[in-house]
Length: 272
Picture 1 (tube, rainbow, N blue to C red):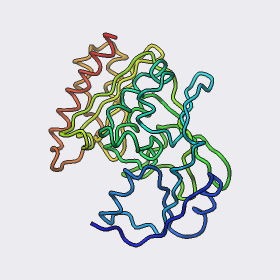
Picture 2: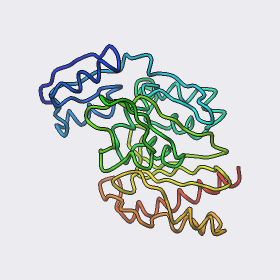
Picture 3: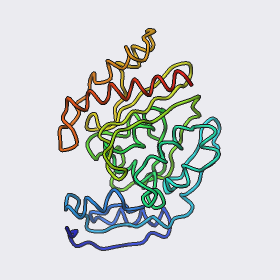
Picture 4: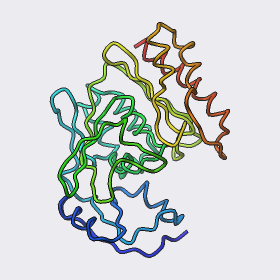
C-alpha cells in the first residue's frame, strides 16, 4: 500500500529535531525506517511530517560509561553485533543484534528506532528489560533517564513523549546470557522470544511477544530464586502473560513455545 501524504524534514542536530517535533504538527521521528515505514504503508500511522534524524552521526557510538556501556540510539545492529566492547562485557546484546532480521536490515536499522517503536514482537526491548537497562531521552525540558521496566507502556507505546528523542541506551555488564527466539523466516518478527541474563548472582528472564509489551517472567525468576532447576522453573514461563493469537500461532502455542525456549535458555545460561 501507499502511505498517506506527509512532509519530510531532515534534522541537522538533536536540537533541530526537537524544534521540528515541537512545531505543533503530528510529527514522527524517522531513523532507519524499518519499524515506522511498514505502519505508514498500512496507514496505521499517518504523520503529517517525518523528522529524519538518520544522519546524526553523533548519535552512533559505543563507549564505556562507568559500570555500564553507553550506546547511541542511531547505532546500527551490524555495528553492535561486531563491537568488541559489547561482545566482551554484554555478549547477549551483541548476540541479539545479530538475530534481528537479515543482513540488509542489520546494516540499516538502528537500535534506538526499534526500541522507540515499542513493538512487543521486537527483540531488543526484551533484552533491555532482562538487563535492567536505562534509556536516555532529550526533550524541550532537557534530558531524562527512564528504566527499561518503565519505558514500554503498551502496544506500540512507550514513555517517550511526542516531543522527545531517544538519544542513548545504557546497558550493564552481564556475566552471561542468551537470547532465543522462534520465527518462521529471518525477516519475520519473533513468534516468541526469551532473553535470559545471569547477573548479580541470579538470573533475569524476559519474554518477547507474550503480551502487549515485553514482559519479565516473574514466575520463572521466583522459581529459580527458590532453587528450582531450569525445567521446573520454565513451567512457569507463561504465568501472567497474555500472548496474542494470529496466523503465526495461537495463544496456547505461544505459551508452549515460551516454556520450551525458557528451559533451553536457562540450561544454556546455567551451564555457562
